[in-house]
Image (tube, rainbow, N blue to C red; front, side, top):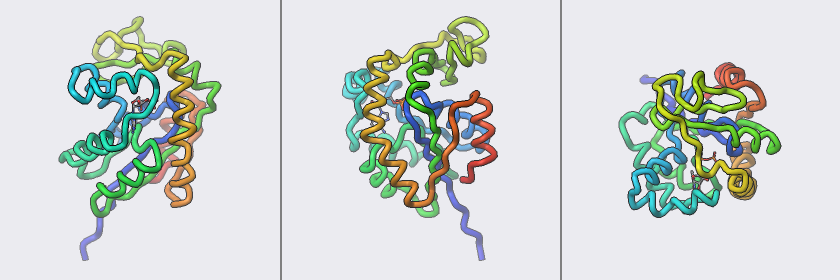
Length: 219
Ligand code: ADP
């Protein structure tokens, strides 16, 4: 009989600035499956000034959530692409219980959810986010305090000028944390009850967290 191949759907959960994007990118390289970041997709739309971009710009700038239907359309389209057929990593989705239910409905047979929580206390978050810089070209994430680029403000890999996210100002980060507590935190309980949750301590160097994910997490 032919063996059924499980298709991993790896969901990264954790507060803003926990390192989800960084670790999701790392794991996507290890596993050769795409990292799908809803935050990155929305930021691209804003940059391109598309209809979607215009719709979400002010919502994102305030640290609130974009509506569930818009997010579902975006994610459903993305995971239907051929590169997602052997699995994918979700960074930033789902972000509330309703989105989690909507996601289940668009998964294909044999897809199995596996959730990785990166645990970082809030006090640490503000410090981290203030120093965060991103490469618009390759999406590598730096931190001027903990993981600086070799040359000031440019990407080590492709030399592109790094940018600072507009929603990384302290006022907006606090709002994003409130949104996280209210909307996203209940997802941890939800996935815990289903027995698909694994927690990793995010208060270590990027590489150590990456190694912990590679060695502890079973997906
Ligand atoms: P964070 O570092 O806060 O996790 P992201 O890059 O994942 O940031 O998301 C940035 C912003 O994009 C969010 O504050 C929100 O406005 C919007 N966003 C991203 N993903 C979602 C989602 N699944 N549902 C609603 N809004 C989202």
